[in-house]
Image (cartoon, rainbow, N blue to C red):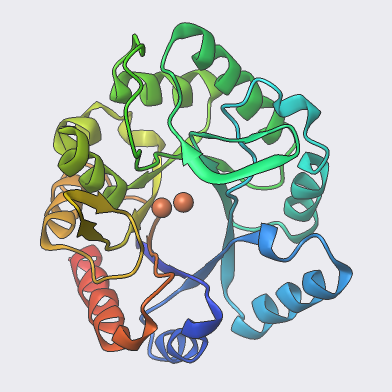
Length: 270
Ligand SMILES: [Fe+2]
Ligand SMILES: [Fe+2]
């Protein structure tokens, strides 16, 4: 099975993405629909963009806050589901996080307190979101700024149990695992090995940087060598459907973005 190579859309990447598509480096686009769905004009803009690119696409949400106990009260949830059902992306994903209280968006992915109770909340919310959804739903691991000491379940167990219980796929972000390894001593390889292989459908790769002893998942640098080694390790065990390169800042460094795409494609085609 061929691995599809995708890239997250950003206006600054427009020319690079179109060129990468023409040269067979990129097979599909990942787009964050929340940036477009709340106005008629922007929805039209997103549809034009997707049809102009002319490949399949996936929707990567950041606002569902699936770990929140008040998810059912989210007034915009219906709009997010509607856009999936109307445009039928090939996959759709969101994060294992709580990032909103009521209508107030924290604009940060907060780690969940990993207990049986929060696991139940997360699983119920994922089931609710993916019920009747016109695309397979994938849950992504976040990079956490801190760990909550009162968690009673290990990170990898919690994530693996959540996707099994909710019966959804995994979007495994290897750069987030790398950041957690540097910041909190997570064993990234053990985390990969603990995941149910048949559920790993997509991967995210990205780069970040260190400031004041902390490694930030900034999506602003080339993919670190260690992340490529994690990819190599994962590919010995799983063939994901798609690998996506994420880039959201420092666009003067575009030749390195291109190099990363070439390297990712080369590794996935072997
Ligand atoms: Fe993400
Ligand atoms: Fe990611």
